Image 1: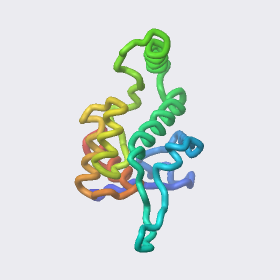
Image 2: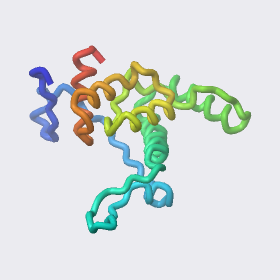
Image 3: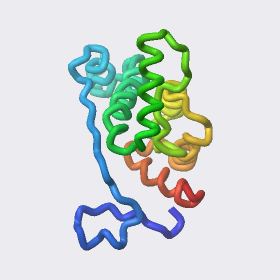
Image 4: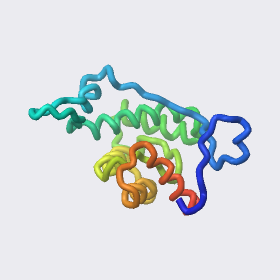
Length: 165
């Protein structure tokens, strides 16, 4: 990561050294939905090998979960003006069958998306209508380090930090 390390700690004494501060955490549970519940499962194949089966619905389920998270965290982090624009867009789509392309608030200039593969980033970019610039850090982390699971966030933050994001 080029010499700069990102400190992750819950000790108050580390606050001065930390580069980032986690302000909110939102968790969305979608397991009650059959489509969500069945999109990832552990199964045994014909040869007795146990592995993980990924259903074709995984990308759509992940996109829906992210939309739920954004809806839940939006009121906590967005300015009132952005919340108002989001509400107007939502009302227009629900009640007036508006085809407005703006359905999600702009949370930041760039996003850190789980870099689990090109298909993950592509689907989230498509479903959230993000620009190439907004997902650049995720694509760079995937390109440079491959699928690193949830640790990809640190690589993405490093990329954003180097670019002034």
